[in-house]
Image (cartoon, rainbow over the protein chains, first blue to last red):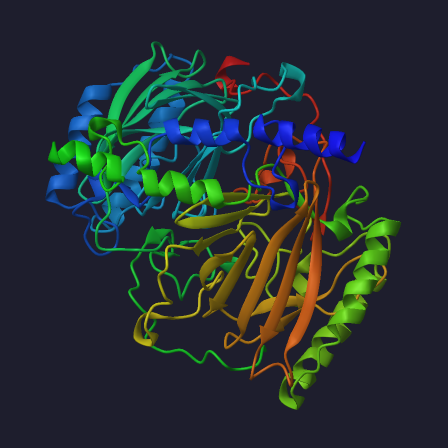
Length: 289
Length: 292
């Protein structure tokens, strides 16, 4: 009897149907799936920020690329949505006019950056495993969970807009195809000025498809198709590039407790990004006040 | 011939393919599968409003008994004042756990839970790969635990940050995590009370070691050792249990851009947690005012 039980358990383990006893190592099927996935480890950066200056200002090459992206995109908005775009442009233009050398913090200082969250300053990290790919941005801990386990989006009565929306994906060879719906406050950039992107809101009816693949060891490409029947008269198509970051070895987080980011890099001060390399004074051992 | 040899040896990526090296795949095969969602067990029978249920309360009291932290005299005086404020706050609504602001700088829009961020309500997700294990909390914190053999940065490149600097290594199926340089204040639950878990700040000279393993398919264990020469008279040892979450299939984000209460689960409303299963019907999403 005992022999039979041992044999059955062994057969299930070998078949990859159950985790390996106490060890809880991956099933054979999971390992096989992992071996097919690309290795996207390391840190990545939107190429418009590659020659970023102090204060997260676009450098000359970044500005050139950002303008090329803006020219390639040319979104056409619906007449109903156009006033929102105009309003956003006006507010951002006024802020830039007030201080043209500082990039705009276009969103709430401590908020996660909403979808698509792939065109921000700072670093990105892809965490790829068979059941999910996670995209983590150093900009306010924006985390996108892209489920690749074959699930569907939740049914309509369980969906409501959230910052990152609901993302599901599948692999077509080494390309991750991501389908995202139910986004809250999504946005897209319209133009690039000296120090900043000019951004327009989109509606939460946005449906986005991204095709993400690593072109070579140092470059990733994200093809974004954005369809929004409320905001856009026709879909947007844009392909952006992320490049491997070479001078840094760790992710950081711009958002900290209580928005008091005095000890992290790239905090937002008075609605604008700044770069702090290291705090000049620190009294780390003082008891709490 | 040379390229083929290198490919077979796992030293280079497979041309354009960029699949993992043989060494990386072999390393992944040795790691435990911690996929899925997890929850600190005191919140397992959580009630509406992120209030601990009877089982959770029982567990919290067990943890509190284990903890029994002894603080240095200078630190104790500060904590006494903090606790006094917290009791006053709780007395105003005993059935609703206060959000954490009154214990220091906890809570509020845009707030990210500081280290250790493993004892909070809500779900957690581990992302385990050979070079790193990442711990993501629904409440908005992300801990990067590097397991590629690196050391902490040298002292002149270290300064306190909310999650500190974590490095780890695997001892069989156990992830051993060493964390330093955590920005003060960080928090440690001190004792279980009526409805919430009070947390106390520690200094950023804290050094912690966590030993994390999956006990079985539905349970994880975190052995937590904390030393803090400024705040603690002696080290603290506690072992936490996490349970697998079975009724939720995806991570969500609690922290949003300060007006999240209307559309996210578990927002903080008037300084207290609320649970919203689904927002009330509104006008079609995204409809601009001019189109109504």
